[in-house]
Length: 125
Image (cartoon, rainbow, N blue to C red; front, side, top):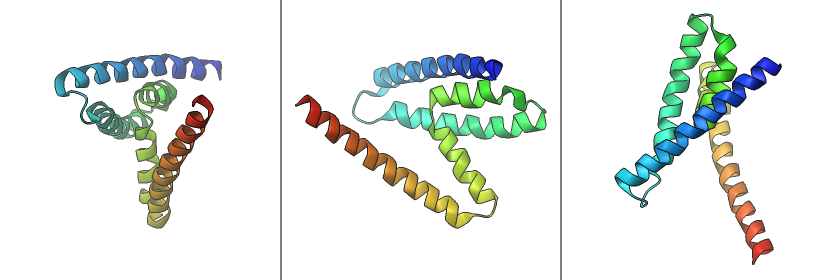
């Protein structure tokens, strides 16, 4: 348990640092008009999650999942985990459940963000 926790912590630090660097780079290259950095880390993280889930399984290296998948990609973007969960449901033949998961996740996450903003605005104004 402690080893896995340390792997997640190390991977998370590296992933979060990578996300910060992408944010800085995207802002310098493309400016603040569109969330290019978020789009970039979501797409790259999802691509990397796809590579890792297959590579780790084929190389019998799932012991590295806490470091690479939960830590590194979790620190870089949680969208990769969301993408994997949705595709896993789809590949299990649970198309309706996969679609429900995607819609509910997006709608509830946006609703929760708006509710959090409203609460914080009420407290700080």
